[in-house]
Image 1 (cartoon, one colour):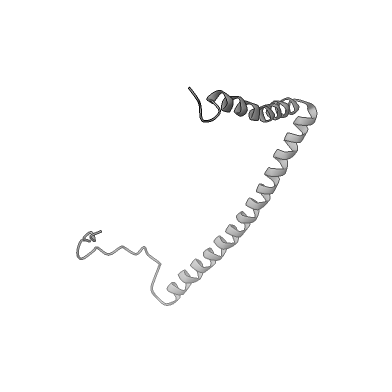
Image 2 (cartoon, helix red, strand yellow):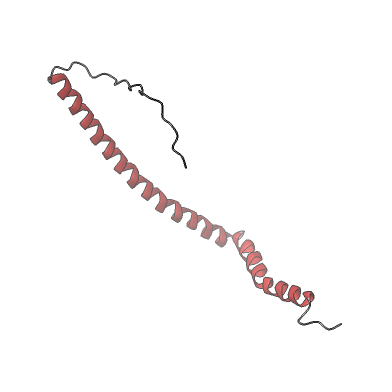
Length: 107
């Protein structure tokens, strides 16, 4: 019986041959990572990545602290204004009850 193209064995052999360089690289990197030079490179990479992220997070934290301080100042100002206008101490506002229940809208 004649076949139109190469058999499955041909594809399998070529696929395995394509995997050899990746397997050799993976084994090589694994072996190098256990040497003192490899451990130093890994720790340097971890420290470099963590330092960059830590600096970014520290900047965001400082920004959030500044925004929170501004919100506190505005709240204090609003409370002082309410007391000065004779409205008494600030109180919690109770939510109003709905007059009619919501009906689902047709899709």
